[in-house]
Length: 153
Image (cartoon, rainbow, N blue to C red; front, side):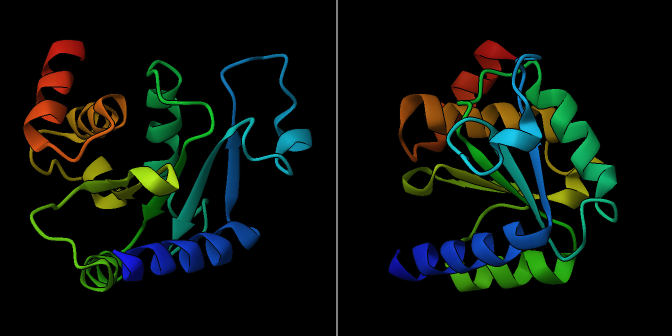
């Protein structure tokens, strides 16, 4: 677990340096002006490509987040290449996922960008709802997260 936290900290610091997108569902919020205060807006960072290079995943993610009740201060890391995804899984010692995982203590969800262009498992919308289920139950239970996704999507 300690390795995972260190890995996420390093990845987010480097990823956010020049690959950050702010999002707010409130039209009164000036996203550019609030990026210095990350607890006010969602942060989407990319790894393995710039937001422009990863637009095939960034754009639908932003669209989906507009209608989903994710916490406003939640962060997302979009992993844009298979090589980076495999590295993250190996370094974080994560198994049994091809699409995403959530680190509750870091208020971060790591998403495989590939799921936005190639249907993996049950599709990216189901994955986003499933990960939200982990957040809502504040648990690592796959069954409870899946039930939340099923009941709410």
